Image (cartoon, rainbow, N blue to C red; front, side):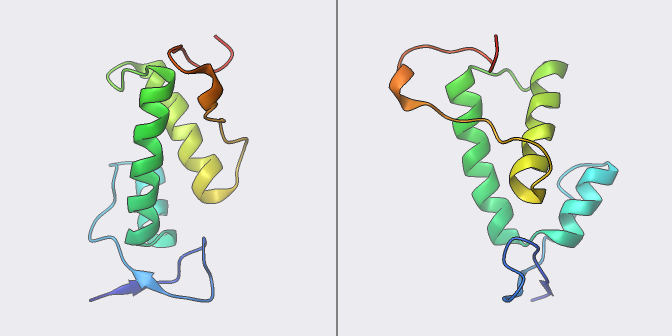
Length: 96
């Protein structure tokens, strides 16, 4: 199994992603800098974001929000959105 030097835990190589998760420069960057274990963790976090904020990933604004969160969470570029469980039962994008 191929491994990669994951930027999220630089002292421990992790399993490499077999292919980029997106057909874009961001997908290539993820494939080269993030291990499969961290990507799996991101997918769980992404599900929480989608459910918490009531996002529809088919909408361009929701996808842009999620791409921004990929950069914030995996690459420490930008601010990661909070998942406030005290507002149970309310949905909507941050700031909206």
